Amino acid sequence: MSTFEYKTICAPRKALKIKGVKGADNRYAQTLTDVINTQSADGWEYFRAETLPVDEKSGIMGKTAEKYLSLLIFRRENIETYEEPAFSPVTTEEPADPMILQTPEVESGDAVSEEIATLGPATR
Picture (cartoon, rainbow, N blue to C red):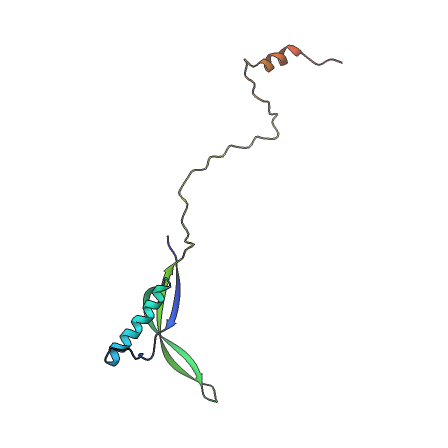
């Protein structure tokens, strides 16, 4: 599963004067293209444009007026993406019950076990 981070910038309000481009709408389109290309050079992918209302105070009395801003939204994939771990069943051994006497298992053909068997009970 991939996650994205987003970046918004204000869309240009005026078209720049570009040599060889005629007409206000063509200049504005080229200005917008330059902004998008600049962001994509930094790894951002153009996602969409939004026009959102903003309340802005103006004048001495602080009267609010509604204004609309055009925003360009860019996104890029997070480098630190979260990946779900693959399923692997965990097998755990049950811990030994401390209330039960634990005796080590000794193989019968072992020389140490034969020596233990011949010792007999301890005496003083």
